[in-house]
Length: 236
Image (cartoon, rainbow, N blue to C red; front, side, top):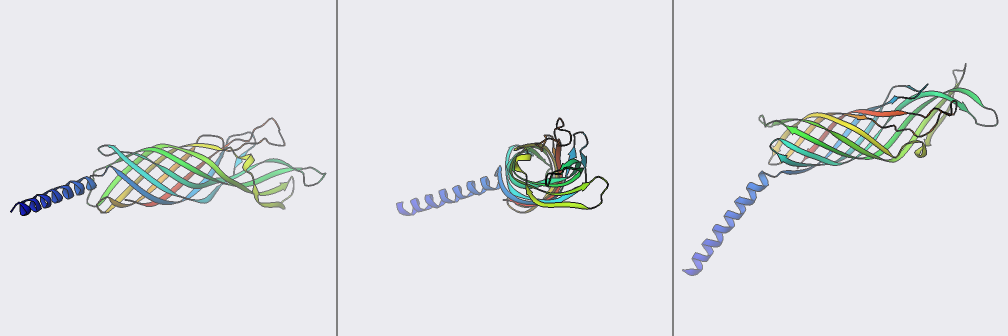
């Protein structure tokens, strides 16, 4: 009889512990996830005689960590491997040999960063399977690599002298800071698992360039990089 009572007590305790664990799991305030983000990137030229020259398609991917600290409010972080840049035009003296030629340089820049986003995510209540969210924060980017494709046009000429895949790490600042704004929607697949989509604006506010204009040596190259991306991902 005593053995039966002990077995019943063990069974009751096991069921209780499992129920508590299941409830805690359902109410988890921590989620991990992964994402991919094709983007359109461009440079805002801020220096004398530097001109922005359009957008470039880029791509990023990364991991997400969301920590709930209040009802409907989350601290969101993680890391991204992101590519951005764009196109600029500026006066340039080409010196391939001993002869210097004045003209303009059309440069397409691509920079890869590891970025650490820090943001606050605000969610609505769940409507059916859908939850909507907004996000605001900042990104801290550390340069991994940088290259450029150059087309030089001498004054009065329509023929370009081109160089591709030029390594320009020493011409790009190591640190990039940006403001992050996003809005999106999550679709719950059951439990804590959701897929999501978002539109994100990443607005750089630091100078990404680190060199001087060789036509006007007193002019520092200055441009900030921005991107608009479409993100899809999954949270667990």
